[in-house]
Image 1 (spheres, rainbow, N blue to C red):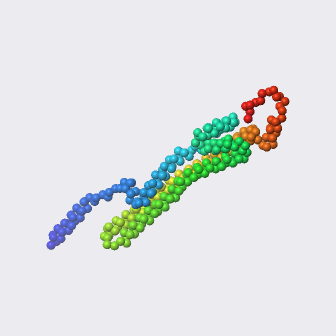
Image 2: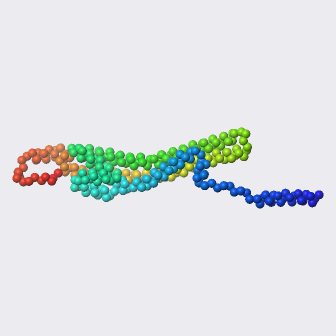
Length: 274
């Protein structure tokens, strides 16, 4: 009898040992794309937003530079041409340049050319308005990154809510085996977490680069204001030397001198003066 018990125990022990030695099938590893697809339907708008974010960052890295706002070379050429009173040539040069300072110069000189009798205050107002316009354009461009940084977590949160709804529906559903119900619950929770991670993965770099570009824009805007002030000051000195921009009293005296007979009537007048 004892031998029978020992033989039965030996049989069970050998069966347990055999089952322990049987290799368990390894779980299938998912790649990054498969994990993203598990995030549900909200991963599609998040994918589009991620592409837009990367493109905006690359564009701003290439365009938000000092030479794209105001360059020393353009300012030196502007000062030299203003001192020579080559305003038409400076308008042509500004039209070929893509700098913000070139736009201010072009708009100001075009206003002077179209309104020869305009006062210096009018010319200065035109330059200030165009300068404010260029600065606001720089600020509004980078604001798209801030918008994406704020919207992406909300889209991810919506995906989280959808995933949790699916999970709780699996819990509340009846007539389903326990194992199948647990698999549905795990799938809904994973969808919620993946959507949350996707929204944060877009928002964090978008807001980080927005902060970097905002600091650059503030710095370059200050340099643009300084360059525009220097441009207006040089332009003011040249406008004072032209009769159409002179003060009324001074213009009246010059007109009186022109109307009075010249003591040197036989001399040839200087036709090259302005």
